[in-house]
Amino acid sequence: MKVIGLTGNIASGKSVVASMLEDLGAKVIDADYIARKVVEPNQAAWKEIVQSFGKNILNPDNSINRKELGEIIFNDNEKRKMLNDITHPKIIQRVREAVKTYKNENVKVVIIEAALIVEKGGLKDLIEKLIVVTSDEASQIERLTKRNNLSKEEALSRINSQMPTLEKAQYADYIIDNSGTTDKTQDQVKSIWKEIVT
Image (tube, rainbow, N blue to C red; front, top):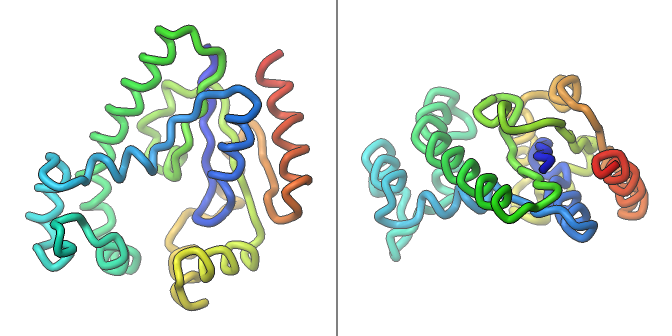
C-alpha cells in the first residue's frame, strides 16, 4: 500500500485535488474532517479547548464556534500553538488508525489530506511521497472571501498566518498548481496518479 500526503495552504484547492484522486481510485483520509470530529461536544479535545479558551467560544448547542475560535488564534501564535497542541495528537492518532484499517483491507493507495503535514511533521513516518497544492494569492483570496464570507483583509491575514507556499513546495515530491482551470488541475492530477500507481 502506498501512503501519499496531500497538503497546501488555505484555499489552495487541496480538497478539489483530493476528490479527483478519489475518483481515480484512492482512499482519502481527510484530517480536517477528523479535526472537526475530535472537537465535538464532550470529546476530550473539546473539554481541553473549553478549559483553555473559555465558554465564550461555544455555540448555544455547545459545539465550538469555529469562526470565533478562528478569530482568536489566527492573529495570536501562542494561542494557535495551544490549540494545535490539544488537537494534533488526537487527530494524528485517528489518522494512523484509519491507515491501519485501509492496510488491512489491502487498499492500493491512501491519500492523507492535511494542512500541516510539513509544519507539524507528525505523519512524516507514514508518508512515502508528498503532493503540495499551490495557488496564486489572488485565487486564494477570491475563494476565501466567497467560501468563508471574509473580507479581503481577513482573507490575507489567514493566508499570511501560514508557511509561505513556496517554502512548503520545497518539501514536495509532486506539485500541483491549482491557479488555472479545473481541467489543467485534473491533467496534473492524472499524470501524478500514473506515477504513483506504476
